[in-house]
Length: 593
Image 1 (cartoon, rainbow, N blue to C red):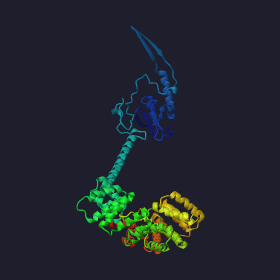
Image 2 (image 1 turned 90 degrees about the vertical axis):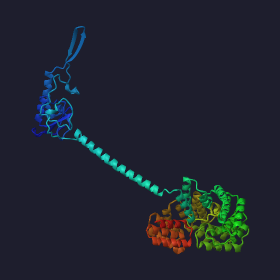
Image 3 (image 1 turned 135 degrees about the vertical axis):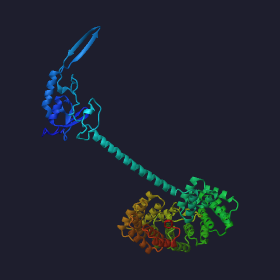
Image 4 (image 1 turned 180 degrees about the vertical axis):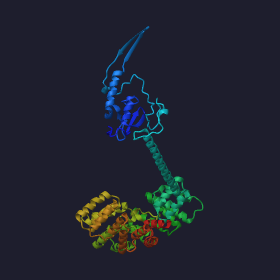
């Protein structure tokens, strides 16, 4: 309802008649319009602070509305005429029903002519011109309006603004999408190397020892087109040893060796590759034939001799294998760990029937000497060292070997690149796990051996079995360092390094090597570089030349944009071990900056 009309002489009334909005009027002017039939009681009316409602419902005009209704009831004739014509006679029936106004949804149209609304006193404030019977010439040009959101002019303006805003928004989104797409396209184009670049990168990564990157680039090049025979031949050992393409490798070699002008070195590599491919397939007789051909071209070929000793080990000729491994040169940094591993396995197998104390002690000392300067195959050799001390009936030595085995990260060996001309499968935990199982069966009651067994299973990716042995070890010896180490290694394997770190912090073994490795990893995850650097510095005090610690410090320096410090740590790490993959990757990243 409209608000009170405090001053009838103030023009506060708007009238909505048909599609027009007229006014403003005073209350008296509205009454005049009603009496002159220029507006009707079914037109709508409102004040600026009120709502639209019918004039007939507005209490300000109650009296005049009543008068108009009375006048209509007595002056007009509402007739309903029915006419029927038969021939020339017309019959007419007239009825005059009386219908109360309150039941009439719409007013009865008067029989009189519609009132003339062309009077100049009616001011049309409708937002836009609407075509109707009113003569537009009689509408004043100066119009005062009161608008709201329902008024057509206001709605049109709002709609116009909305369209403008949408247009601007769509334009911004379009520009952003185009710019992002263009940037992405430029980036892809910049890094989308062609065939020659991919092959070149693949060969470069192979020489650096980054075998996974080498294979990735090679496969991308092969997706563009088949690599040429020379490129395939240069990748032959990587394809056979890392990608297990033994049959395809032999086909490449056979096609390559038929080509005229092959150098002696290429022929040796071809025969050695054939031997390696047959070893991968378990065809030891064919492998031996090609090794002999290799030695026929180069009698001192170290890789051929090591593979020959490995074949003897695989065939179960442990005595010959031991002699062959012992006769090999120990100067090859990449091949020596495999020589030492093969020699130890041969010695263990021979000692099961009758231990040779002198050989056992020599084997124990050689492994201990090697572990003091390298982490390559550290965990594998330290597990075999436990076995050697057990065969030598040296409990103290066995305990020391257990501590060395448990204190090494489970993932360390996987971080080293290997000599691709050798068969390293004897160093896989799928093969070594049987010796770990033998040790457990010989010492089933020991909580330490349960922890050792769990660690071997973690290395073999048999985590569910490992968790059972860890639970038993903790239940039996909860305060033993080996129990904590097994549990922490298991948590780290599951990606819960922070929990493993907390586990050490709540124990008395915070300063053990594995605890420090775990602390450094946990700190790096949160980018707490000072904490990680502290852990690595302490590791270097415990194990001078620790390549994992040098690599970690180099990474921290690189992240902090300290090139000089990073280069110093890289140099120190390579002086210890040149085949540590994370260190190679950091050096490559540093050189590319």
